[in-house]
Image 1 (cartoon, rainbow, N blue to C red):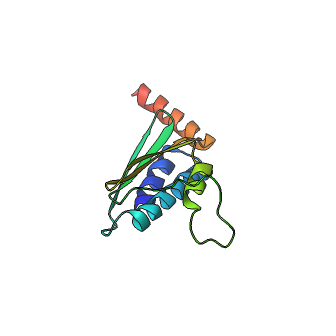
Image 2 (cartoon, rainbow, N blue to C red):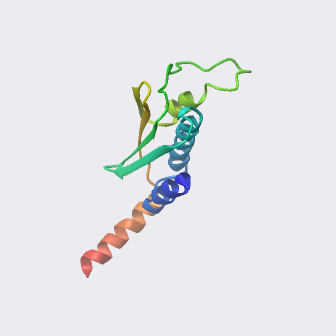
Image 3 (spheres, one colour):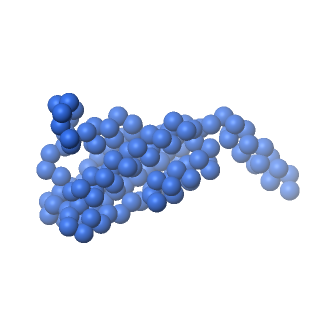
Length: 132
């Protein structure tokens, strides 16, 4: 559901497919971590803000709080430990607000890339509205 809402909003604004894909990948990884580490209820909250040419996402859980933030990829046979590194690779800025015993909030920001056809459409629409 989160991916659909965020993706639809970004696409409707004319964000490129590649940029939308990066944002949705980072969102999926953050949500997967929240489910995995967010406590027994597996509850988490996602907040998205789109403005000023950027998309900011916050994924907050109520778990124990991250203990270690990986800086390098785990060995090839490891089953876990890649999510944060994937997020780092596809967004421009990532930070963690960790409160031991109360949860983690992951904040991710990405500058938006615009589809040229969508920009032309919006400019035409703006001109039509200005003429009314």
